[in-house]
Amino acid sequence: MSRYDVVIYGASGFTGAYVVEYLVNSEQFEGLSFAVAGRSEKKLREVLRNVSQKTGKDVSNAAVIIADSADENSLNTMARQAKVVINAVGPYRLYGEAVVKAAVENGASHVDISGEPAWIEKMQLKYGEEAKKQGVYVVSACGWDSIPADLGVNFLKKNFNGDLNHVESFVQLLTGPSGYSFNAGTYQTLILGLNGAATDKLGAVRKEIMPEKIVRGAVKVPKRAQLWEIKEKELNGVAVAFPGADKSIINRSQYYDATVRHTRPIHMETYIRLSSQFYGYLIGLWMMFLSIFVKYPFTRRILQQYPDQCSFYMFKNSGPTTQQMAEASFVYWFFGYGYKEVLPIDQQHEGKPNRKVVTTCKGPDAGYIATSGCVLSAALTLIRDKDSLPKEGGVYTTAAAFGDSKIYDYLASFGITYQVESEYDL
Image (tube, rainbow, N blue to C red; front, side):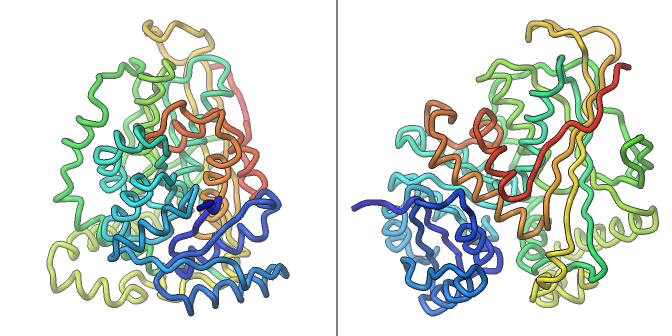
């Protein structure tokens, strides 16, 4: 049986439907075959009708595969029909593993839009060897979590013209006059993540997937207050630590760089840039209350049942409006510090960094438009740019899998671009 180039699993979900729309609209996918998959044929057909209307391309008769995370046989049947499965069904800690298992055991590569480090790293531990044996690639965090960040550090390394030592990154989310609300699915993942943080045995998993000690530069990232003022020529505002998956993904990429590519690993801190201190305190308070309330079943149930009210409408069951998405964009800033001189990897630099390079990744609405573009670019790379992938299959980060590929061109076709903003000698 011949396989579809791409099967989008969860195509009738909020994000999945956008992934289908952007695939159909993309010139990059011309000549490639795709199918949509999920539990309800009626809903999948509805998505195909809507996408046909929106794009002016009739895909109403595209292939539909019925598959359910709770039914292993249906997932196996789906995976056997795919070269690449795009898995858009979260929270992944609840529904993700069965899809990874089916893909790996049935010869399909798997990309997803998870931002859940505990689940992602557990998948590497459990399926890394089997994926290698089958010659398939499992790459998680291929959405806005964490392609802009992980491939951003990779881009900065390649364009530093010296030895990069450490990076501070800042997420800047820009909204238009109509504001913005994320879809409640993202909120439910956040609640589960905060609840699981206490029970996830991440330390033990990390020791197994990253057993070697890697040596980073002697100069570490500056210690910052919980809320601090950014005083850069290119960027101002206040910063708080970014709670997303980016740092954990980048750290795994650095391990791969050091142990496989034999390039210098870096220190990394990730922040989110806010416009005012007041807003910073509000977000901090909200996160503090959330992390307390998720610990108790009764308050956790209330948080899960009323996402709109409990998040002060930052998250809504209805998600953002089309207008809100059209007005939204992001800039991901990278401030890289290092040395003009290039030394062998086993030699340490002495003294303070003497070079600074600032780069950005810019793109459309982070939540759904950029996420669709990111995961489709990952799938395209697996299909069209096989020669640039690691020689063996396995479970990889985005920078490990795609760091030397044409993915930057594919991302640009979806409006996601990387560039060097400024360079300084210190």
